[in-house]
Length: 174
Image (tube, rainbow, N blue to C red):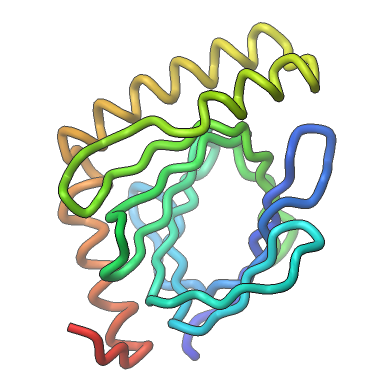
């Protein structure tokens, strides 16, 4: 593997462990830090048994933003955007609190906001502050438009990073 490993530490509101996995530094540009992982990389949600990725994945962690995104090579979705609290770095570990709402651009180009039910449930269960709810809603609305329109980094930029990652992973699936 090339690039330093980075541990991705997704949490839920209140600190409960969510998704945990490692990726490798790919590069940085005006959009943020790009990471990658080859097929077969382990990932674990909470205390569930580990799962293994079926494809090369590329992740963007923008600095100070309320979102992060992951692109999967030849999966049923092109990009999956998680709405999060701004990332907090501690060396080669980045922690983000998942705020439930996600934006998915499916392989057919359709863009959908998902997990609205989870957001409403957690909003009541965890007593999300009103300002947090407003920020999540505004961020989701703005990003859904950007993803649908293919504004960068949701256009060609990610494809370039994916090509680099696939070359390093020697991903034979074309």
